[in-house]
Length: 186
Image (cartoon, rainbow, N blue to C red):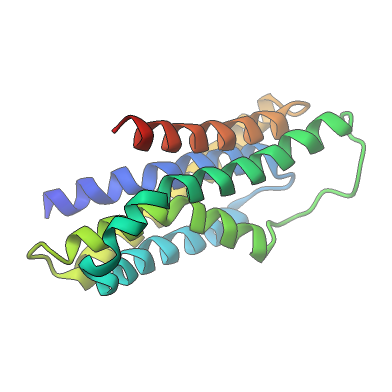
């Protein structure tokens, strides 16, 4: 049980960091958006180990070979767009502040932060674990850390209003670079 919990926390750290950056950069971010983000991240973190477990050993070398590139690409794309948007407009300029994150954006972020969970699911196919219980723990931890991260980011956003979107974009790009560097070095 302790091992599954440690795996869940380590898998959820990227979702936590993305949630913090979203809480910083999304105007009007509140409880509703935090719970919605947590549901997306938790659901994807639950589903990816199951999918990985089902794929099993037949494709594990392919997933391990590209998971870091996929996560890096998605996070760099979203982070880059946030950075670009923050540099193009001044404080208070631009479109009306959205009160919510789009379903598409949440899905892309959830995929980007759960690619590693897919690879973990593949490795679980070779271990003696209850995959449904393990995936549920991973999903619940991701949900909880994502909600907390988003709300923490909202608090930070009040401190950094003018550059919040820039900071959020940089965080996403840096997470992508970290994922890429860890896999290339290891």
